[in-house]
Length: 165
Image (cartoon, rainbow, N blue to C red; front, side, top):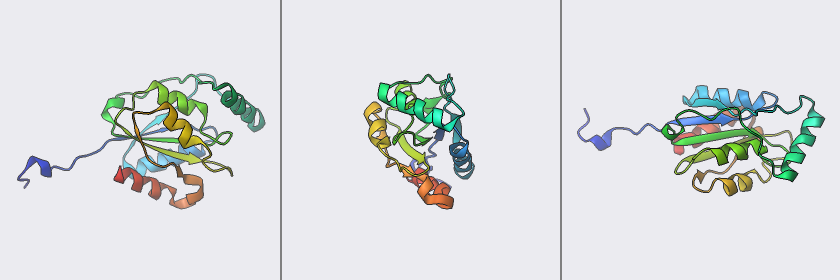
């Protein structure tokens, strides 16, 4: 029996917003949501990138050089209900894809905790943290989790940071 209202545990609500091209980041997002009970939201571009790796790399480089903001198909529903937003993405051209910056700029994340999580082939997180915090100043950012380096321990590591948030 609870004697005081302050003894009621506060349940934080988490959204995992992810962008994927090959499905690797999507799988990580799904596995993390299953482990943590978080909701999922796919960040999908209006105009798809090429399925050819080399052409897609060129498109990503051009987007970065032009500081482009690819349009997103939809916004998450009831974003105000979430305390923590996990943003998962593959590294493109040594940073987060510009569509991640579109997501951060177009959604009010004021007062929310943002946990960036990246996947990559070999380059590491690059300048993704700097790019993300530059466009989303009113949120609290946790350090970027480099899921690729964690291999099969990535989901547990992400879940631990969500729990601490």
